Length: 230
Image (tube, rainbow, N blue to C red; front, side):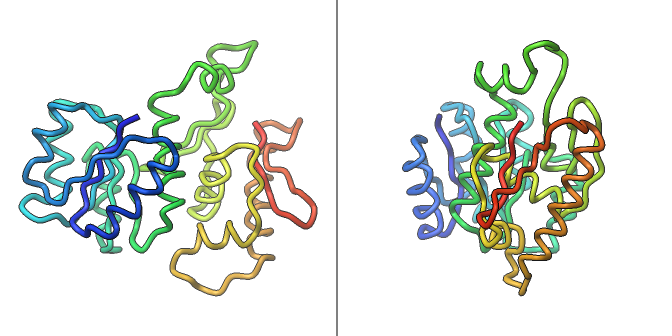
């Protein structure tokens, strides 16, 4: 798949590009907003990773313009925390947002999650729909509105619970250590104990199990961490 990175800081752009290429994505990099609209119209990328503050034309304006002719998934990137409410509140058509500073691995995980949601493969579709009920959706996350649908039931999660579930769902079956969860969820580098993560996981598990008592989607791996099994 072809990913367009629109980022005016070349070092950040190249770092993210390197990680995406290692994950077998084709990558194009643009460094200002001048030619983005025309490039997207001509090349039809599979996803756009776009900084909010760009020279010539900003990311919000570009997002609105692109939405007039394309439904390509867009992940907005911002270093301005005060802009997050605007990103969520305005109907821009963005599919997700990431705050700087970020981990390149998190960016790759977010890209995979958004692409899996908007362009599911045949195998993903079979897993998501279930073998017996084609109308049943096992798990769907709306990363802009922070909505979660689990077995066709809406679940109210806190921001921390949502981010935990999103990370676990980015690679179902993968075991995430408590430290990996802390590093990804608390990017302001606050001091968080592993017991705090355990507490949030316990609450998340309780909410999921209330919908589907049989089975345990969030599984503990003794002395290692947690994984999501759907």
